[in-house]
Amino acid sequence: MSAGVSDRSNRFLRALRREPVDQTPIWLMRQAGRYLPEYRAVRARAGSFMDLCQNPELACEVTVQPVRRYALDAAILFSDILTVPDAMGLGLHFVDGEGPRFERPIRDQHAIRQLRVPDPAVALRYVVDTVGRVRRELGGLCPLIGFSGSPWTLATYMVEGQGGHDFRHVKGLLFNDPEILDTLLATLTQAVTDYLNAQAEAGAQALMIFDTWGGVLSARDFLRFSRDPMARIIEGLSRRREIPVIVFTKGGGAWLPALADTGAEALGVDWTVSLREARAQVGGRVALQGNLDPQALYAPPARLRAEAEAVLRDFGGGAGHVFNLGHGMLPDIAPEQVTTLVEAVQTASRGLA
Image (cartoon, rainbow, N blue to C red; front, side):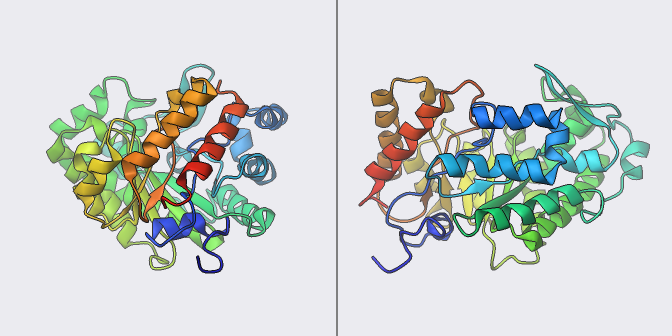
């Protein structure tokens, strides 16, 4: 194996580009979070979740915590997908046990037309500063992933005013006035493009678009309102050739070929999809990331190792796989389980990747 291929500092980036690696790289969505005691200590110091996100020193600390504790192949910026609509003045806050809420949801043409694209150097400066601080703190240990929510996902929260339930407000807008929804999505597409470009300029080495609610759309509506805005974002990234992009649509297994058309280097896949079948569908055009069911982390260690090995076998040999969960870490997972998972993936994947 050539020099550097096994280096933790580039294994993840090589896999995204479907280049040879010595073992399958692994990182975990929501790897910085409540399951770690060191995270809870910093969160208590911060005062609130948004205070933590908006403090570059503390956000840097919790970003780096999991890659200090575990031999993960990438760090992901500690932030929230709703920072962009918060910067647009919607009044984001978090309710314990219930999640995000917006004080001023937008549900009519006037409110949507009044929205302005925030300048990330001003309204989102705390995120940009956190990215730069994390890159310095990592010191080349592993790559840093920047991210944003997709325009459709952000629009869903902004119109509903909270996390999705029956989606009656945003889908009402979709069916009653699709052109004004297009206007909202166009504004968000520009905002996310600017935001990701700012993260890249500050030091992010890969970018991820989280399309949390794309899976609630019909196939036809998915293309117009979710897939196409993400493709326009990727096209608008200024360092497109240098920085790989991952797109993850939760519940989007039926649309993997369409998602591969966005221009992303990799697609996240949830646990409802066979990696073998996904690989056949995309025809080697993109790398795949995933896709262990997060609930498997509650299993006894032997079963957890077997589940990890099953994911690796499902993908098969060759380049282009990043091991991850099919969705985010759950808050009551025992930290020791992550050690078991990381070691299982690294041991079992040597010779497969």
